[in-house]
Image 1 (cartoon, rainbow over the protein chains, first blue to last red):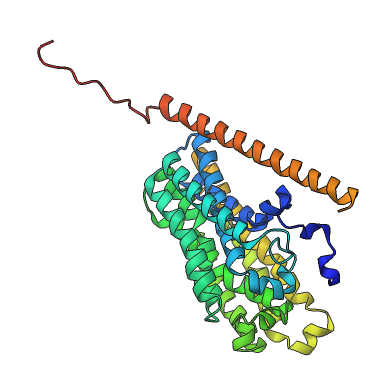
Image 2: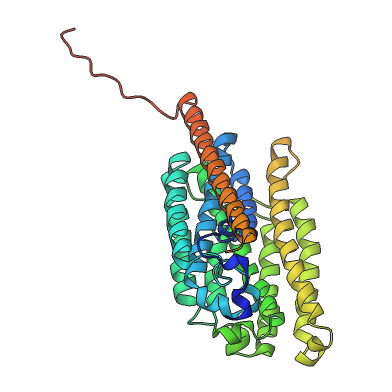
Amino acid sequence: MSDATINSNTVTGEAGFGDYFALLKPRVMTLVVFTALVGLLAAPVPVHPMIGFAAILFIAIGGGASGALNMWWDADIDQVMKRTQRRPIPSGVVERSEALGLGLTLSAMSVVMLALATNLLAGAMLAFTIFFYVVVYSMWLKRSTPQNIVIGGAAGAFPPVIGWVAATGSMAVEPWLMFALVFMWTPPHFWALALFMRNDYDDAGVPMLTVTHGRPATRRHILAYTVLLAALALGTAFTAVGGPIYLVVALVLNALFLYGAWQIWRRDEAMSEADNFAVERRFFRLSLLYLALHFAAILAEAVLRPYGLGGW
Amino acid sequence: MSLRVTQEMHERRFGRNLGVALLLAGFIAVVFGLTVVKVTSGGFEPPRAPVSEGE
C-alpha cells in the first residue's frame, strides 16, 4: 500500500457533498453565472425576477454538468497534471462513473428546465454549449491540436448569448459582441497559465502551444491575441452594449493588459525562471479581473440606460 | 475499520444526505415559483372545453 492510499478521502463511495459539488467546477461556474447574468440583464426586454433567477440557475447547472463530464473524460490526464491532481476523481474520492452519471443527469435537467422556464432556443443553445465543451473541446480538440483552447474557448463564451436569448427569445448582434470578448480573451488567459505551469501539459501529453510550438512562440501568440482582443474590446465601446463607462474601463484595462503581454513577449525563459514567472502570473491574475470588469461595465451601461445615463 | 473512520463515514453520509435534501427542496421551490409566475403572468392558458352548437 502506498502512502497515497492512506487517506480517509479515498474510501470509495463515501464522498461528501462538497466532493460532488467540486465536480461542477465552481470557479468556472462563477464566470458562467456572471457573464450569463450580464447577457440577460443587458437584453432590452424586462424579465421577471423569478424567471431570470431560474434561467441563470439552470445555465449555471448546465455549465457545472459539462464540468463534471469534462472531469469524467479527462480523469487520466487530471491524474498527471499537478494543477488537477486534487480534483475529486484523480484523488480517488469520487468514481468516474459517478461523474458521468451526475454530468448526464444535470445536463438533461438543466436543458429541459431552461427551455421550460424561458424558451426552446435558450434550451437548445445550452444543450449545444454542453455538447461543444464535452465532445468538441474535451473529447476532440484538447488532445489533438494546439488550437484546442482557441476553438474550445467558444464553449465558455456562449453563456452571455444564452442569457440574452433566455430574455428575448431571439438572436441579436449585441450578445455576439460579448461572445467575441470572451472568445478572444480565452487564449492569452490559458497560454499565460500554460507558461507558468510549465511541464504540466507536457507530462499529460496535451498539445498545448507551449508543447507543440515552444514557449517563445507562445509568448508571441499571447501578444498577438492581446492586440486583437484590445481592438475588439475598445471597438465594443462604440456599439449598442458600450458607452462612456465601458470605454473608460476598457481603455485602462486594455492598456494594462497590452503592457503585460508586451512584458511577457520581451522575456525569455531565464528571466521568467529567475522570478518564478512573476510577470506571467500577474498577467493571468489580471486576465481574471479584465473579463470581470469588462462585463461589469456592460452591465453598468445596461442598468443605467433607462435613466438616460448608460450608452451613447 | 477504526471508530474514527466509522464516525467520519457517518458524518460524510449525513452531509451528503442533508445536501441532497436541501437541493431537492430548493428545486421544488424553484419549480413552484416558476409555475406561479407563468400562471399569473398569462404565460399559461388552460385548454378550454369545447362548446357544442346545440347548447
